[in-house]
Image (cartoon, rainbow, N blue to C red; front, side, top):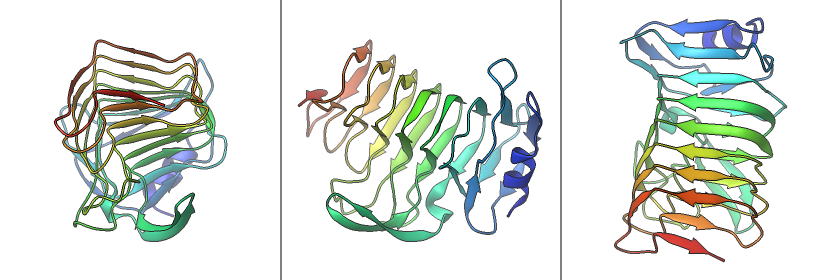
Amino acid sequence: SGSIENAANNLKAGGVLCLREGTYQEADGRIKIRTSGTASAPKKIKAYPSERVEIRSAFRANVPASNWVIKGVFVDSSYSPVETTQSGRGPRTNSAQALSWGAGSNILVDSVELINRRTRDKSGTCVFGGRSVDLTIQNSWIHRCGQLPRDNQEHCIYAGNAQGITIRNNLITDCANRSVQLYSNTDNALVEGNLIDSEHQNGITLNGSSDNNTVRNNVVYTPNGDPLSTG
C-alpha cells in the first residue's frame, strides 16, 4: 500500500528511490520494508538534493530487511495510526515509532529529521532498534518524541537486543522521557558526538545487561536527570 512502500521494496540491489519535494503519506500510515539490498549495493531512499521531503508515515521493518540507506527526509510519525500494543508494563496506546527496525543488518539513517508528537497524548518513541545488527543513525535531528504527560515509556531513541548500533553526531531534544536508552542485551554500541538536551529524565541510559558499549564525546544537558546512567 502506498507509493513509497511499493517503490522501495521493488528496487533492485543498488537502486535509489529519489523523492522530489512534497508531502507523502501511505494509505495505512506505515512504510513496511520487506526486502534487502546487498552489502556492496544497498537500496536507498533519499530526498532530491536541496528539496524538503516530508513523510507522514512510520518506517517499519519487522522481517529481515538488510542493507538500506535512508537519507535527507523528514519523517513525522504522529500521522501514523494510533494502536494498542503490549509491554512489560501493560498495554500502551500510541502512534507507531517513526523508525522501527526489528530485524536486518547494515542500516544507515543519515541526515534525517524525526518527530512523533502531534498532540500531547498518544505519541510514541521516535527510533526503535530491536534485534537489528549494525544500525547507524547519524547527522540527524530527533525531537518532539513521546507523549505528554510523560509515562516513562516513550523515548527519542530506544534499543533492545540490538547489536552494533551507532548513534553519532545527532541533535536529540524534547524527549518525553529518556533521550537514548540502550536496554537489555544491546551490545557493541557506539554513542558519540551527539548534542543531547534532556529536559526530563536521563540523557543516556545503559542497561546492566548491555555489554561492550562505548559512550564518548557527547554534550548532554540534563537538569532533571543524569547525563549518563548505568544499571
